[in-house]
Image 1: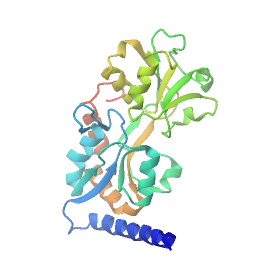
Image 2: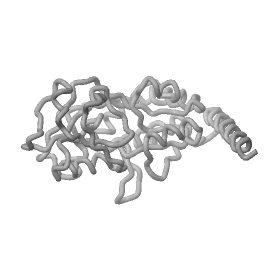
Image 3: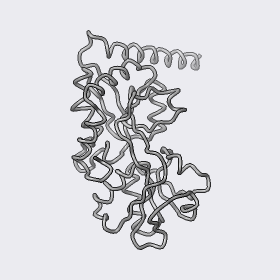
Image 4: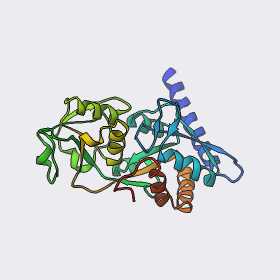
Length: 267
């Protein structure tokens, strides 16, 4: 009996979610809410510990340039959460959107990616200048197989870094980039990985370690970042796509990102 009640409640919630999503893009609805989640990904979107405020280029893009065009209000989670949890919430209808998600074909079957990425990132490894493990260039996977590399648990890996022979040292810290940079400085890691070199550069500048570090790009294609929606909220995705195109979102995003970080990749 309890099982049946739980199943019925789930489908009622799912039905309500679909109705609300459809209503959210109807002409009669003013200021419809989109429940949106995120994880700390500096400088794209992050919760500032000092102020308790959300910041970052994605946050600014959505709040200042997209919400008005969509005639919606983004209701952000009060704190960051892991990607696995966010994806489950999207699938269950507990959330309507994710602020940042890298593209994977298998994810596209279950979630509604925006039609265009807002940023294309360069995967990279970060080394300590002068350390025995530091590499100036990387051309093949064998170059890095001897390294102990820091990253985050249950997070996207770019194609080059999916080799099962890589020696990972994963953390579950919400500010994993800063945590791994600190471990690198303490000699606990040989290198730190990120699918987005922007975050690594922002992190070392924030920690005043730029002169001590060497950022080396990986020999692979750029990683595309998208705003992603629940399949139950396809209308929100379509509304977003129209607003993004009207704002020339990809070009605008680079301009916003420059307010947070100055780097050669951001042109």
